[in-house]
Image (cartoon, rainbow, N blue to C red):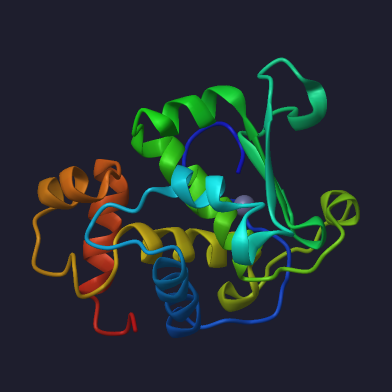
Length: 186
Ligand SMILES: [Zn+2]
């Protein structure tokens, strides 16, 4: 995820997934990591990496001035099962900062949706318009919303309640409730 405003730029084409497919992966994540109730501790999920069932997964905290992340908050390398996060983003997420929590949830999406691509190759190529279902960034944002604000838990809440209970920003909660109230949104 890049710095700047939360307007999604098209990602790279990956295997197509529908909302219900992404939702299932988010539900499984909650189940496997024992997340109960509204608040999903995304930092706690990262800290399970390297243990038990997740021996192969790891995350790395990168100093803010380290050029390895350049202008990004975080990056995921799926084939290495690794998430790299800027130190300030990690620290802010520990303090329950909504934007930083969403960033980590988004990166978990890239990891658990098993996007398999060569990132260096991806960055240098222009793909033009991609169908939404095949867009890696749409899929990761959808996963983050499903993980942090599960359908069935948040449907009947107000925007303010979703913010407070789920630890998300106003705009994330507003977008989520609007989509859940759109009949075409599965
Ligand atoms: Zn992304």
